[in-house]
Length: 271
Image 1 (cartoon, helix red, strand yellow):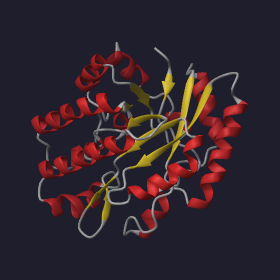
Image 2 (spheres, rainbow, N blue to C red; image 1 turned 90 degrees about the vertical axis):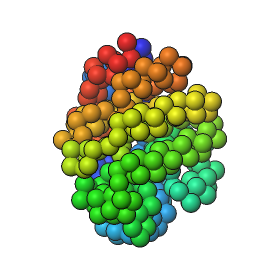
Image 3 (cartoon, rainbow, N blue to C red; image 1 turned 90 degrees about the horizontal axis):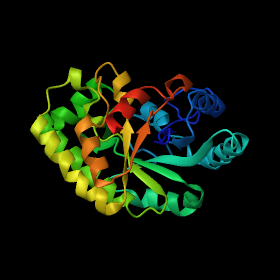
C-alpha cells in the first residue's frame, strides 16, 4: 500500500495555519509518506455566501492562484528526491455556478495532478450556507429551513451525486471529498436516519465506479469533538475497495502536525 496523503492544505488557506508548505511536507517525509497531494481551496465566486467575514476565510482570492501554483511547483522540485509532491486543488461543487469551476479548470487544469471535489455548500434560508461552519449556523440557516435532518441528508447527497457527475469530466486524478461532511456536528444536531444515510451512500457506489472518480477517505472527523468519526464509514470503504474504486487517505491537514493523523485507522480499514 502506497503511503499517500491525498488531501492537504497550505498557508494559502484562510481558515487554516500560516505555517509554510515545507513544514507539512517535511512532516510527511518524517512519517514515511511517499506521495503528498497539495489540494488547496481555490477561489469561489464573489458573494457566494452572504456572510462577508466568512467569505473572506473560505478560499484564496483569484489573484493568489497563480502564486499558489508557482509555490507548490517550487516545493515539488525542492523535495523531489525525498517524496512525490503532487499539485492539486479541492474544488467545490458550486450549485448553479459550475461554469465558474469550468473556467478555472480551463485556465489552470494543465497544472493539476489531483483534484478533491467536495460539497461544502447547500442552498439555505436566503442563499448558500456552509454545512461545516458552526452547528449554530447549520441549525439556523439549513436545518430550520429544510425542517428535518432526513430532508437535509437527501439534499446533501443529491449534491454529492451532481459533484461526482461534474468531477467525472475532469482528466486528472479526482476524488470525491469527505462524503459524510454533513455529520460534522452530529453530537449537536438531531440524529440522522442511519438506514437513509446507508441507502444514499450505497447509491454512490455505481456512480463512482462508472465515472472513475475515487473517494477521499477523510479522517478529519476523528479529530472533531462534535463528530468523532471519519467522514467515510468503514463498511463503505470495504464495498468501494471490493469494486476497485480508488480510496485515498486524506488527513485534510490544516496545520503541519495534522499530517498523517489516524493513518493507522485508514490502514486497518483498507486491510
